[in-house]
Length: 214
Ligand code: AP5
Ligand code: MG
Image (cartoon, rainbow, N blue to C red; front, side, top):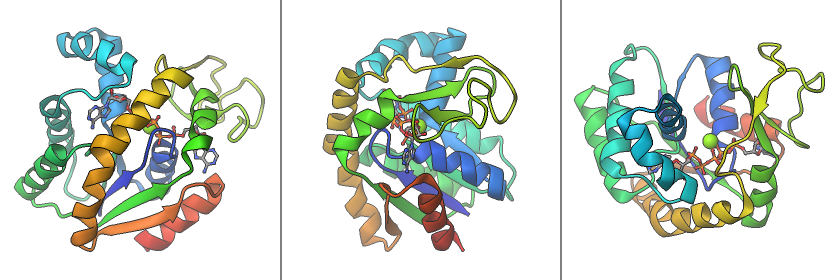
């Protein structure tokens, strides 16, 4: 099974992808996570994209499609893929078709998390992750069971993303509206698009995704 999770910044793509990884053994392909890893490792590509990411603009289609192709190449045929934050432009959507075809994979579902933009700033500015294992949390909506201790690995160190501030979020949303939302009709025309209410609580969103995947 190969699926795309689509939605604006803070819609819950990463949160739901993490649950699918835990529950179904699928593999999350988050271009945002891959770019942050390259940036933190200080690779030439990472240094090149750091400023762009900080501004909330999109990095080049070539870079992200290259990352996706490489990651898919490292997976076994049996492993399902969850595309999280990719594709984000019509060019990336076309590249993904080619990348999947070359590897004998087909796209099963494109799931759009429909959300109210006003709520997203609140979600994003409250977000943090475990510094050790990356498990995601929120100051109010997804707290660890024991305050200050990661549920997954027990670490007590957490971090916040530099682009998770109210100003950059506005740029990221504008990029989504201008460049990513226009790819939804492409998938709708192919009968792949499923829309779900991303404003429901995290468990309800997971249940809605589970109902689509079967
Ligand atoms: P990326 O990392 O993909 O960021 P994004 O798309 O802006 O999405 P987010 O990760 O902010 O949101 P999410 O939907 O994953 O939400 P989450 O589950 O964490 O990209 C970052 C940057 O990298 C881009 O700006 C760009 O520069 C570059 N980039 C990446 N991919 C690219 C590409 N393909 N092309 C070009 N450039 C690219 O949830 C948010 C918070 O809300 C969490 O705290 C969570 O606990 C909480 N939450 C989640 N669901 C719910 C719910 N149902 N109710 C209440 N709270 C919830
Ligand atoms: Mg994310």
